[in-house]
Length: 258
Image (tube, rainbow, N blue to C red; front, top):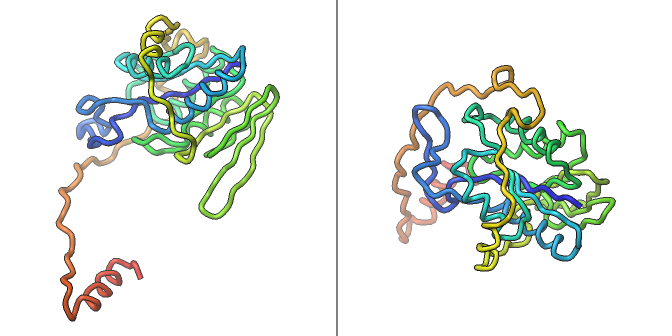
């Protein structure tokens, strides 16, 4: 079985997120770049399954600048078997539609039985790419899973919300996305880090995907206005005295919290 995990590099989740005020794109230089934390949960599922099922190959696939090589190699250190990085200057600032198109072309080039992704990235938080890729590949998708079971013929999982839990299933080949409810990922150990250096790692451009992908004839996001985040203002303090109950009620009412 071949499982492909879509890996996205994002600015450090716990660091400050900044926009380039000239381009409107995320500033990916001023902070440390890491694998998206929800993607790591998807990697954990794929690697754990491969450890228990001989003949399973886990491929980490990413579309990113060449500087993302180190981040993708972390996926190999965690236990993925090989990495594929799509690098092309023409993809700088690609929107969701172009990203999905390139990833779908790369997946057809690589081949797959199951595609695994996070339900949404922690930087853009669009949550659309998994569905768009599945649509382009004409395969079923199981979204936002908290648990996953997989065999040679189908994948099943629990889609959990605050009010209901749905049991979903689909025949292979298929796409799944996991949520933050999924199991915690492992940390790469020294053995895994050393092994990652010898694992296959392929860098491809658009022309090598075997598809006629043009960055000029696709819908692109248009930035109409850019502004920096305003400085945080001090909060409202309610002093504990005879008027505190009334002051608190007025504050909640003013902010439409009651």
